[in-house]
Length: 267
Image (cartoon, rainbow, N blue to C red; front, side, top):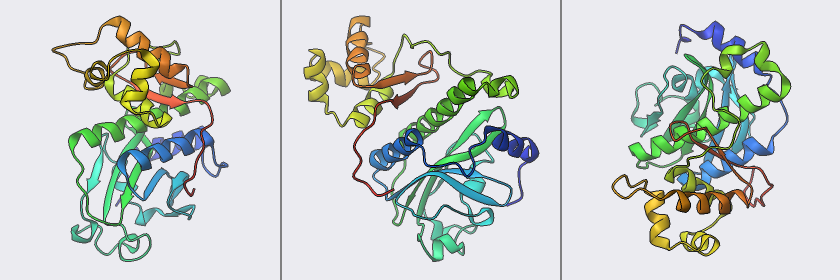
């Protein structure tokens, strides 16, 4: 597929961020591990699209470092701001003869959320791959997009720490403030529980709240919104275990675990 109309700006942004060909990073590895677990897929990747290749900043379930860009499903993902889904690659005219479909890793299902670092600038994607057909609904797409936002939040925080935002000012536009958010969403709570491996009952014990109260909070029920005290108890319990809630309000949420976690999955 020919590059998008902002390709030169996109490549300039990618190279300025200095992420290509860098060593494995626990923060990005954790996000791919979380995506692999949440969606129960064999492969999850953080893919960056260079001029003629896709390179994997983090990967679960795949051992190659990248592929030619012409074979990359993510080459399509970066053309839009929305999640790109291929339900059945073997039945898709653009992918049926792709070497990644006819050969290893035998892609059948693909879903990718673009990594958007500035308006119209998408440097890569967080993608899921399965070797079998699977359902993928709108809620799944929203969750994948929010996990991709966690990745770009992490990149943004690193540009602040390194001072790159002074030479890359557009990347910081519209990004979340650095103070702790006053609001958290049900999706953030579910993602945080998944990172910690907690059930609803375990969070109930930690907070003294009933399981039904936590379920309502996680469902974001507008008819019965959670009280501020409920939100504070849940937030404090999760933050006490190393969870960081990213985004200054419910319009741009994210979740990250800042302590190390044990990992039994292959990288």
